[in-house]
Amino acid sequence: MSTHDVVEAYKETLASREKHIKETWIGAMEARIVREELIKCQRAEGVNHYAECKNLAEMYLRMMKTSKVTGYKQIDLS
Image (tube, rainbow, N blue to C red):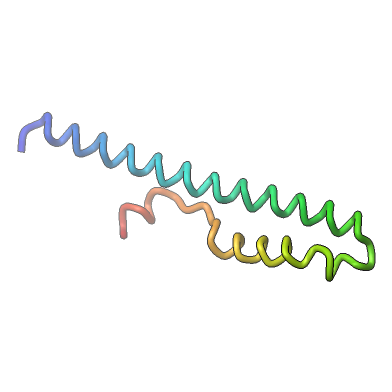
């Protein structure tokens, strides 16, 4: 394996790490936006927020399970 091949492989690894980290941060920020909207809904609806904000609460719970920021070390291990 030549030095050029090693450098290219390393660049590809760095690019895949960066792409994965950006995607996880986007997911985390989307969850944050949903949480902020849920808080607004709960404040606006008052005692009826259980019924009126249910869809936002369920969406936020789903996003909390799937939208976690992971570091690059977990990417390289898998």
